[in-house]
Amino acid sequence: ITSGGVTYHDQPWHKECFVCAGCKTQLSGQRFISKDEYPYCVDCFSKFYAKKCAACKKPITALGVSKYISFEERQWHGECFNCSKCSVSLVGQEFLTRQDGILCHKC
Image (cartoon, rainbow, N blue to C red; front, side):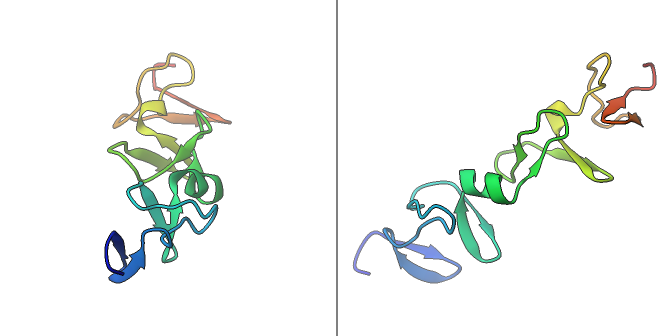
């Protein structure tokens, strides 16, 4: 590698060889997520591995500053963790579960 290389897990890569383990898209200069020592583009990681938000059904990834809430077998994006009836945020609040939804104490 004479120029434009990428270092991943302390190993040098040609930038054209450093690709997503799923779709083979070049990852040099792109955001990616590592899973089992393999790099994945955000789309492939979301499709194959990310847990889905119980409210919006979109993937929960480790990117960004967004936090998520996990309770029993369900997960929510922080901004999606709201009362099913009145939509008040339940982040840091006590809540009750009802079938597929969550409720604040008032509801």
